[in-house]
Length: 337
Image (tube, rainbow, N blue to C red; front, side, top):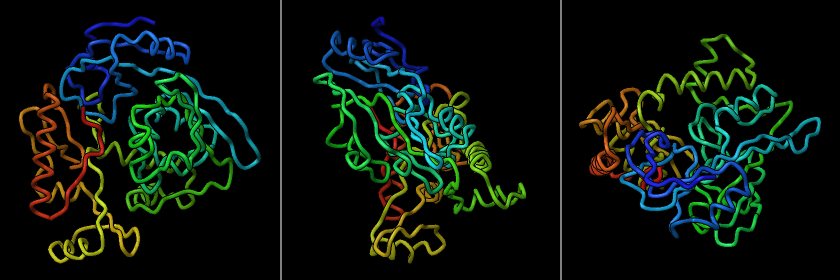
């Protein structure tokens, strides 16, 4: 374990933002993690995973701790279920594909989501009708202040839409070191309600899809809409889909009768943020090297040399225009630093 100074983070964030960390270390074991916390050269910490759900708007004059813990372990299994533990530094998509090769069901709709295992519970990542909480069993953590290890159950994590205890009262207090999932071994409860998935399966003449079929459909859909961060800097969906109450929804529908929506309950409705951004005229637009992707308006992109501040300014301009035009405020899904 070696603590570096003035370390470039350009290749540690999927936006490809050029900025530096005052101090940086990458840890590969729990013991190294504890040692790094004991020796930390700065009181301020920045916990870094896969760098996929964040926007850096400048240099980080702090101690950046890169969690690079690796390993996948089957803890327990029956005829119908299996508990699989993955360390925080494992790549999310690679883990999903590992589970699919084992015919472990439950994560297939979450294929090709960028990032690592350790940051997935913080955001309660989700896609195509499935969220991490649906298969989450527990996670192991290290308390930063005391270096004590603690397990969080699903109930303790208080998962909500793109939210968890780790974004609220436990924020900055714990480092997630591993996550355990409860997955199915047979009679998989698949989720194919989304139109894009159904369309892909029909095109491939698949009537009874396996979890591999669903994963392949999701990968194809995401690749058709979302740019590869290795080729075009981005952090996936930049904004959350806004949830609105019935009164706001009715007013919105009067003004935009053709807008798509999802009824969560009789009193809560979800409006696709991508539709709102496209309606506001931003889809495919470019402002210097900061832009909005041509195929998916939810995705802000770095065309090469955009700064984090330029991308954040674009995000705020989008928020303002959408609010003025529709009356709905769209909230960032990414963490902005």
